[in-house]
Image (cartoon, rainbow, N blue to C red; front, side, top):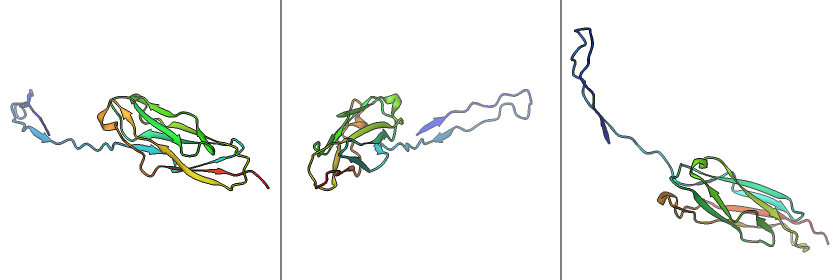
Length: 147
């Protein structure tokens, strides 16, 4: 809540000079939502090394950099290029890539589906500490092995 304080009018026109203008009380509603936004909730890689890229960005501007740990639940199927995505405050709305690469296993095991963990964030901004992607990320590594 804040008040805009107005002064009496000043004008060379006597009809407008010295009019009393009331102060105005205002409320600024905060519509910022704290959180992480993924470009998609699923990714697909292949055992031949085919990659997929998912992006992550922040839903509002932080006051400090935000670090997001990213790990594959099945590194024998898909690896993550960077273990931590670091988003600077100025780049909060710029999508940051999470690059995933399929891994060969030489086993005819069919397509393997698993999660890629987008862990709890760390930041000097208290609003962006311990944030997590809602819903997570599911990845499928397509099998290319034949009997």
